Length: 273
Image (cartoon, rainbow, N blue to C red; front, side, top):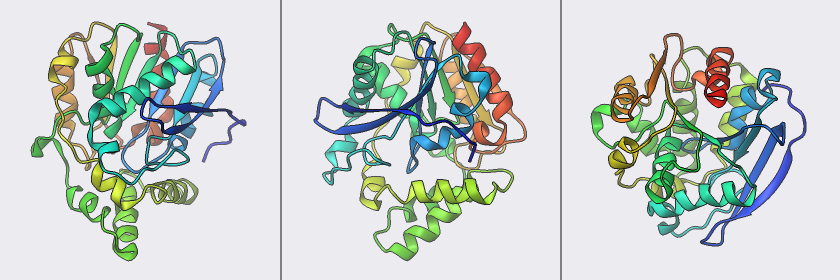
């Protein structure tokens, strides 16, 4: 992973009384960017953003979703199946850390969490949104070829779960990641229990909230994504008024890791707009 400085750490309490692990880097007075990671990952996946000197003028904030990383992991499914809980988790971070006019950047399942926030609060408190290989609809044609792996990742049998998770992490990349990055992402993934992964399957009803957005939006997607089909990005860009689509031709499901310089330039431009 990238060499990065020690973060400033926080614990945020959600309205449903969960402790959420939050870390931040960069300029405390800069434009805040809240990075929202995806399914079975952790905030450390954003290392090539928080470690980039070109972004240090921004206030770069990552967190571990409920059920992931160093955050609380309640066993009851309702903590993951009710969208308001995810949206209020984001709102709690924004308010308790004093993140004013932030950019929300959501990867994969993180796109759904942006949707959950928008359903609850709209976009009035935000300065911009970045959807990163995000999913905001459940229609089968918006998914790639990894659905079987994601189902196996919920298996309580350790051997089955680990094998599927290993394959899924590799499938997130067009080009094989270096060993350090791969092992770090795999270890982070295994901190999310199979039962939590299973409970994260739920309805997705964000079309009205997305269509109501009136702020700068970038839709970034890897053209070779086999987890979430590029058609999903096209759909989001067509749904959100004025959204700009940025298709990364030489990347899979994680363009922020495969093409970090270009990704970070798009993010910096959005934060400045």
